[in-house]
Image 1: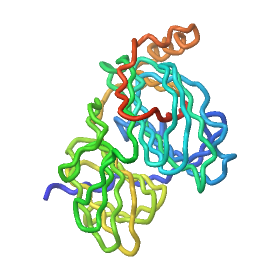
Image 2: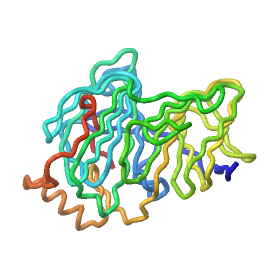
Image 3: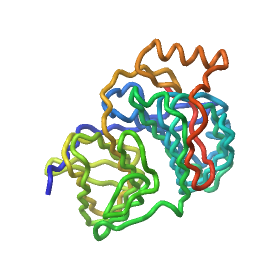
Image 4: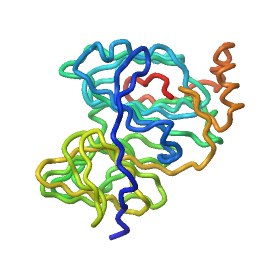
Length: 302
């Protein structure tokens, strides 16, 4: 066994409003830089009231980041400046590398029993910030589910578990993105790369994360781990479900302006000037990998 990662801190998600008036929960964002490097933001949009989300996220730009949408329930339509249009359905993932620039919109549809999904932002290193934009669009049936231990189920979006590799590949920050469920009266040790940033976000139930000095975390709680090479979760009376995400820190300066994240204020100013004068989409043609159908991305955030 390797070194079990201790819990560095717990954070509760907080209500916020984004886009044209969408109500959601922010797990972490710009006030928490650089704690989550290479990750910038995680939003949880979960509502059974269409008035909370139908205003959607009208056309907006992105540059310098990757936006990852994972939808558990509902349906979202999208279109963008590269000519893509379509929908993301329950269980689907869209991993969008904005690179040098993309303009798009995402419009949630009335969803029963609820709209529920997540958007994660991953930063790009300076050397890749202006790369050509691309998509990796993954349908629910392309995401493998494995059982690396009794009582444990892992849906592998990105990374490798028990010899099974997820469908999202060739990402700069070498990430892992997993949807994990652990049954009652079960302990699970998951190997992770030492030196990578690792966090969990609890979707349902409650688990105890860490080693002997572990800490309990329930719904809508972020668990940020210290360094090590094993993540441990122990579950008592009720199953816990959580997202487990890791990636290689970038360690570069961050200049963040809403939907655009660069390394310097000068680069940020230039990006918004280009957006205003119509030269923003300069990164060349898409290198989209389109194994399935288009899906949505989220609106600008601070």
